[in-house]
Amino acid sequence: MYARGEGIVLNEPSVIALNSRTGEVLAMGHEAWQMIGRTPSYIVAVRPLRKGAITDFDITQRMIRLLLQRVKVSRFNRPRVVICVPSAITAVERRAVTEAARRAGAAEAHLIEQPMAAAIGAGLPISEPLGNMVIDIGGGTTEVALISLGGVVALEAVRVGSFDIDAHVQTYIRREYGIAIGERTAEEIKVRIGSAWPTEQEYSAEVRGRELMSGLPKTVILSAEEVRDAIDEPVSAMVDAVIACLGQAPPELAQDLIHEGIHLVGGGGMLRGLDLRIQQETEIPVHLVDAPLECVVLGAGHCIEAYDDLKVMFMDTRT
View 1 (cartoon, one colour):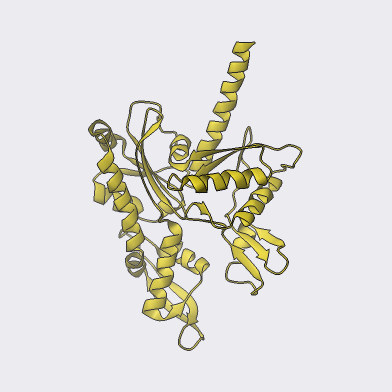
View 2 (cartoon, rainbow, N blue to C red):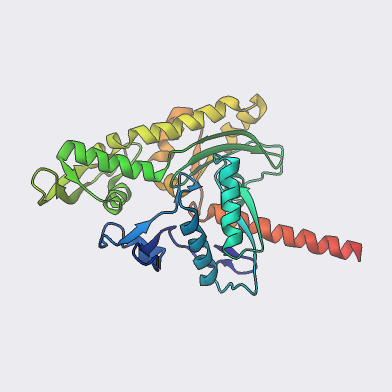
């Protein structure tokens, strides 16, 4: 969350833990993330946002209200809210996001597409007649946008993201070793030894889980090459989206990319070797931006600041 004049004031995972018997919210953010796979049956840790869209309207509304309360927003000082959304979601899903924010306490709710916000947050010259390509890989979606003169010239979006990579790691270990692991363990494996392209230093990881046949705990050793093969399908889908977007680019802007390169943002973009994989497939330089996780929210924050400045200028002119 970004607050005008303050910068980033909150950085938490979009997870909420509930008591299914009473409906009481027990935890949110990092605290709720630690509960995934470790709770009794009546306590559920859920992600109300999947594939960039709302899967549970009521829980999303409660989560937004809690987020606003965390940054000292009450019903007496209702804020204007700008929400970054994937460009792949439908008009119905957009209305659901806006309505959830209003019911949670926002006076106004406006939407901005994530690729545009990411380009602004990365400091790219989007207002110039120059080709700027951004690859935004989030938890549930991958969006590739070519931006010039403040608008999107070409766009390709697929509902594949970091969560799909985690799921493929889980499926591979279940299929090859007969061991069940949780979502958090799969993410830890991805972060520790996961890669999209061979790297100089590759390690193995000790994986602990429950053996399906006996039901007993078991430990296996997983190599980086195995993980790379396991996640090849979602990574290939991301690369194909980049190639499809490049195929839509006008020739004049396409040649700009040879010099400017492609900019990689989002948490999924931090997968080791992903920039090298895309560069190998497209023969265009790929750069991971300085703050890939915060890039989108910083871009939305800049939009808020610019809007307020323009409003003040308009009021001064009219006066």
